[in-house]
Length: 193
Length: 193
DNA sequence: GACAATACGGAGGCTGTCTCCGCTTTGTCA
DNA sequence: TGACAAAGCGGAGACAGCCTCCGTATTGTC
Image 1: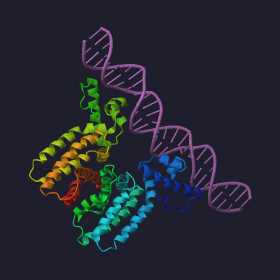
Image 2: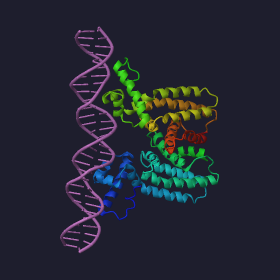
Image 3: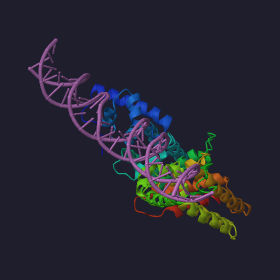
Image 4: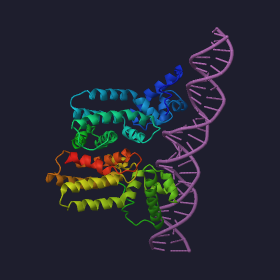
């Protein structure tokens, strides 16, 4: 696994850190604008660095995606912990699934990138998904223990279903920018409980 | 809409028909092998024609996808009609959804291509999806009229959900080639009924 | 058999990915 | 403060895929 950028043995050189941060910032903008398939050369250009610099810091698209999502994932992780302390285990799972689906909707194509990375040991994006799958598992187990979930489904499946919901909501919306996610999710959770 | 290839005013010239058929045949193989993003230049090459010939017959990827799917869609349409004559309206809808999901799983990436085309007036793939959405609507209305479906969902949404299920099943399978579709579908339908 | 209509094909322009390596910047140590 | 090695930079260019253009070849018709 490549974690040299995230946890280097020695601190990054000043110029390297400057470039790293500029790239991540610009990447977030580009992904928001063009989806996860935004041109990497273009990101490098807009960040004022050469393509070589971008690819040295982020050997592939997943690495950059992962870096641009760290904050969002931190917040998600916190939410997961807070939800474990709430009373209604069923509602907690519902809220968690909605948060997961919203996360996967951050940028167009993200649900796809995430799901693809899940089956790819080497992807840093997939690795960091492990934490989210685990959190899903804890909330699912608790909900099941309290009888709030009866259906047979694994944490991993639930995680993928959240992604597929994000996928469906993005595609079902007939342009009209309607937020279909809650309704679609309700449909799914109705079957789960 | 471009239907010149499907319903020409005058019959195609012999060489044109020969090439058309070779391209469609090879395309099916290539999509099966590399998913819907298979290289079109490569398909042309393997079909023994120039790129120009491929693009003249199929101005874009969707046109080729659509042509390579005609048979499967025919069978699907027939199934839809047969299902309308069965007794159990709920079970008929279940079976239809499974068939839709399997169709969208034909090739890797197909669910995505289909869903994308749904929002694209000009796509021949999307146009031909209209028939399937209509069939979904008929089966859904019937199931609802008989009380087999209580949840609030449109035909279009159901169609997209079938695609999203295909998407999820393709991604949830941890390589192990397991067929998760029926279970995932059961989960969804449990919420719908 | 000759002619017009139709179709062919592949060179080449374009965009995007990713690598390689000569050059520049940085941090350190005297 | 200056000098040196290590670390980092960047952009040219190789490569792959998409798609168009137009000179050439094939076909059907009279």
